[in-house]
Length: 178
Image (cartoon, rainbow, N blue to C red):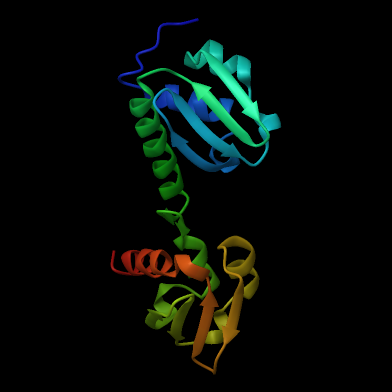
């Protein structure tokens, strides 16, 4: 076992943890308790227990169904913060703002220059577009988490995202206003 500075986890260290849990795409949920990194993973067969113990200093890896606990000790808060920062940075480079893939949404609606107005109701993103023929329903449903695209008329569409709609609208507005 190596020497680990748990109080100041490096980018390389965090990338090693991500490798050991099957990369960020494998994470469905992440939190921590006093001593453990607690995860729900899509595929626990991607967990590399030896790597986590030998290369990241974990004292134990506990797998129960899709729940994985990686025991690091009392410095878990610093490790978790560094992990969150790395995941956010990687997702930002992929076009995400928070948990919203803004780049794909904009691609699916024909670009930000196609938007005339943006609003939302409780579950739907309501858009007035210059040209609805530029809308790619397949991208919106298969790659952005939308459950449905509804064409209202020649300029208006609703995209159903559910209760996360406020986060979606705010992320798109943030991207538009850059």
